[in-house]
Amino acid sequence: MNEIFTARGSVLIAGVTIDGSTVDIALDETGTIAAIGKDARKTIDADIVIDGSDRIAVPGLVNTHTHAAMSLLRGYADDMILQDWLSQKIWPLEAHLTGDDVYAGTRLACLEMIKSGTVAFNDMYFFMDRAAAAVDEMGMRATFAYGFIDLGMEEKREAEIKATETLIAHIKSLNNPRIQAAVGPHSVYTVSPEALSWCGDFAKEQNIGIHVHLSETEKEVVDCVAQFGKRPAVLLDEYGCLTPRTVAAHCCWLDEAECRLLGERGVTASHNPASNMKLAVNRAMPYHWLKQYGANIALGTDGCSSNNNLDLMEEMKFAALLQKFAWNSPTLLPANEALTMATAAGARALGTGPGTLTVGAPADIVLLDTRAVCNTPLFHADSNAVYACNGSAVMTVLCQGRILMHEREVPGEEEIVREAGDAALSLADRAEESS
Ligand SMILES: CSC[C@H]1O[C@@H](n2cnc3c(O)ncnc32)[C@H](O)[C@@H]1O
Ligand SMILES: [Zn+2]
Image 1 (cartoon, rainbow, N blue to C red):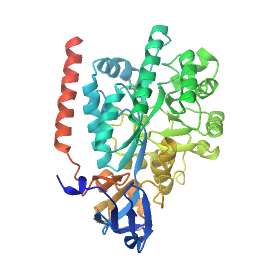
Image 2 (cartoon, rainbow, N blue to C red):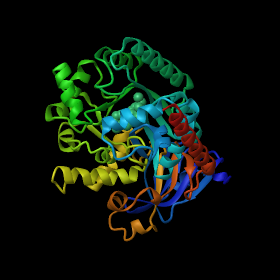
Image 3 (cartoon, rainbow, N blue to C red):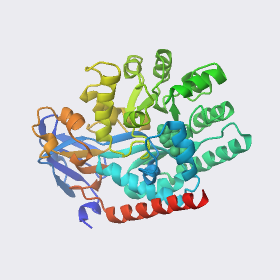
Image 4 (cartoon, protein in one colour):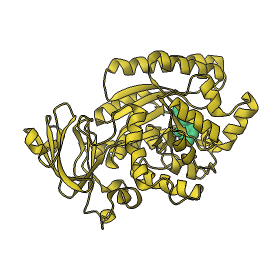
């Protein structure tokens, strides 16, 4: 293995481009940005030197909504409407998932995210202790929520409460600053009011975040109003589930008052444009209202079964294009805002630092290839990053100062891909046999 992956200590990224200027970035032994500037190399005696020529440095990307191990379900069921897709294909297959599957699927997801510039993600799924083990090995950051679904059944609710408590105790016991826990009520259509209330209280008691799907489809809103006499965001708020540490995924069908509510509560709205377009949810997240009312607006891919990849570079372009198209405004969501959604807003959502390249920030850094076709010509780096490039322009990735990928090499790639491929086939076979 290239010793750049095993060496530890201070790092110098020499002569890299940031905002059109050539600078050095010096990282200390704790993985913090110690200095940025023309002479930053003089501030440290670097143990590791990365040549930054022909590279643009941007902050590491943050994926604020995914189900990482669904990488195993990539291409398993496409071109369906959401409710049928979940109830006929996804949930029956997920019933056969094992902890080993989630470990293999999460490693594959981490590999894919690292290769496209993502350093941190917000995950909601099952067997999350195994997902956490995978993330620890891969060197990324993640926040894990057990996907809580009780469907109004008391017995199931008790089991989901236990599973949530067990996961959170486990994650806290790891005492790993890269790995955090959240409470994960799946949605207002799968979680009872009693359970939502428990989730809100428990998140507050544990001082952790909440990860929830919100207003993904019109049906969700119509059914919620019919059943509870209020819209989904209002219902979540009533049970204490809208907080500054809540990440609400999708938010497609929010009305203006709900956007104001999310802004007032300091909630993060995670925009998932590829998944929304593929599942044809028929309305784009109202970015303009959420921005107007001060919500934190970040970006997510959703799972690999509705995207079907985890490339947040691509997702920035989908976000900018979908917003312009849906709201008939070519000036909406310009490239620099798409980059902010994928970096600083995501980092704020998960509490992983400022999500900027600034002194004192965690060294979560991505180096893009200036020689790539997508960066030629290079009039505006933000424009190229959002509209022209995808994850293949990412050359080097650091998380907390540790080099996770260099010159597109990630240690263990072949084995990760092979094991995940085998796990996916075996999972599909087990589901097939039992049907
Ligand atoms: C209980 S863990 C998460 C749960 O959510 C399912 N899921 C994946 N994508 C979506 C989506 O777009 N909307 C709703 N639910 C989704 C996933 O398969 C798991 O069962
Ligand atoms: Zn989702």
